[in-house]
Amino acid sequence: MVQNGRQYHAFKEGSYNLPNDEEEQARLNLHHHIHRMKLDGALYRSPLPADIERVLDLGTGTGIWAIEMADQFPKTVVVGNDLSPIHSNWVPPNLRFEVDDFEEPWIYSKPFTFIHARDLQGSVSDYGRLLQQALAHLVPGGWFEFADADLLICGDDDTLQDARHLHETSQVVREASARVGKVMGSAKQHRQRLIDAGFVNVQEETYRVSESLPAYVLFRKALNTCTGEMAERSKALE
Image (cartoon, rainbow, N blue to C red; front, side):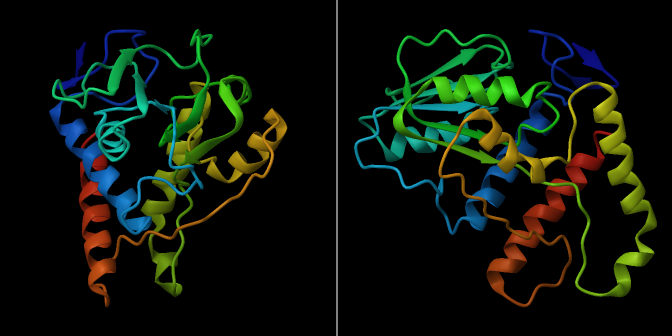
């Protein structure tokens, strides 16, 4: 489906509010690299064993995380799930992609050692149900990793008070997403959501990402540049 010059997914039309065209795919891949820089190049933070049997990537997007995970663990079965079939056709033999809605009942016949979910805000209408299904499809001792961004705008000095339009945009996005039943900017609630769903040993890590330039450390400069570029791509969706 094409709207305002942008292409959107056809399966479960309207379930996801962002496009799936080449421009959006480039933004998703850029965001993946931002995540890896935040994690010092790692794909995950969970203390996974060396012999992972099965991995599920929810909302896999272009599949870049799933592809790299399958390359890193060639003996592991990796499954990438998304509404849009925008992933690469050239994938490792231990990886498969499926077009499905993770908010519908899951029908996997075997549980997973690790379930990965990243940047799902705006695509989940019932976090409780999603997390309960994830818990039910984990092996005993398995791990679920949930990474999401918060829309809270923060600053290191008093210049932030002059960014009135930035604050207004953040608030409008929160309100609009709430109206359609898929709230954005609620990452701070994820820890309690996991506990309420029945997860144990729930750990939370918070990372600050700056969009300001120049930066004083090469790593921070690279991260800022990627984040700024992603922000510009996001603005193009308006």
